[in-house]
Image (cartoon, rainbow, N blue to C red; front, side, top):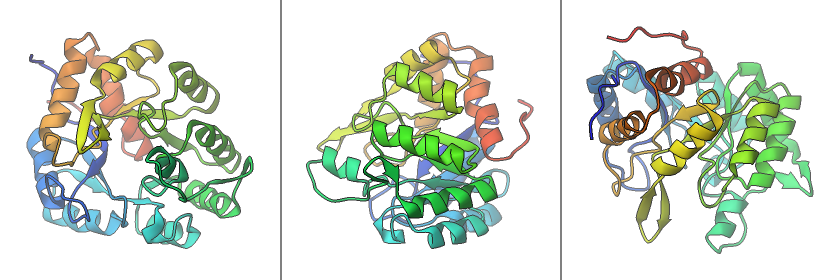
Length: 284
């Protein structure tokens, strides 16, 4: 299968890279060079364990020509729901603050484990998270929902809006541990103006992954591209390198009837707005 859709100017807001505790298919510099090779406009580096905005700053200096941004994930290595870590990360230029992922209580419960980070006490948002919302709002940064349960996502989105958070991304809503229905996704987009981040693949156990592309196509056809961001969540050694996964993803959508205008919206304009970049990058 082939597509004549140009990857020039695309933005991927969710990529894993080395150094990491887990083996990755590329390090930060290799990733940035892949992005440069494809003509990508910007990438966002994510780690489950450590902040990445300082790494992104250095990569940007060494590999000019593509914007490289960092983020912070609120797992146990940074103290969980730690407003001090969030404040520092945002001051250093982090664009996205991810709520707990692998250390979220919902993630651990899905894997048959106990414990984990809770964002609710009863049905109320815990106090440290309210402080985090205020910090995110004050920097006009992005709040991403991580690996929370669907119930937690609705409560978090509602409370974040009350605290002035303008940019909210629901992280891979199709993941088995989250599994937001299309109707629930529609409600979140319509009532709270969130974006849904639709990623390349998801783990299914035993080091194996399954493609999300058919599910993503269904969601885009049902809900439209206005509330969608196309991201890969790539970097796993079990999946193709980033440049191959993003090419395969875009080709699949284009070959299944997603228009160039819709692809531009999901891969360029929507993420550009979230990253405070100009809304249009001329294609070549």
